[in-house]
Image (cartoon, rainbow, N blue to C red; front, side):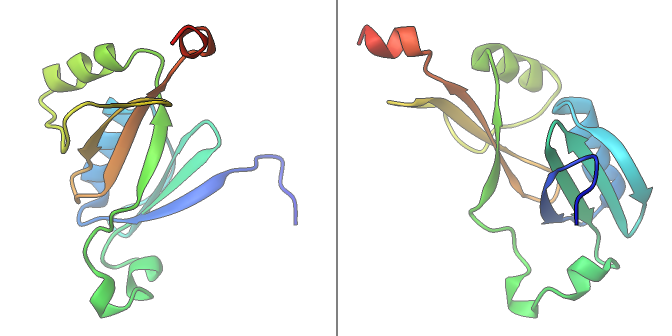
Length: 133
């Protein structure tokens, strides 16, 4: 089955759908596609569709009781200027869950949404920089 808009969808279980929508739209560049709050909302950024499922949603009800805490998995958002993003988000009062980490592929830092789901902000190494190292 094909639709004109193709998304990669990730479901995040959240405690408060409205708070999650506010977080993703105000701070991370997502826009609201569908809201059935307090049960569910759907936010989109490019090809990524986050299904924000509250406790009353069918997605949350299908989750086994022993899988109720946020996992170590995370969405990965590429940014052009990580330092500017860190400053902007700190100025907005957000706290990060990790220190800035650098590796051969780039630099990253983690923050969490209001329910504790992780988001990785990642700035890749530019090819010219990598070739000169």
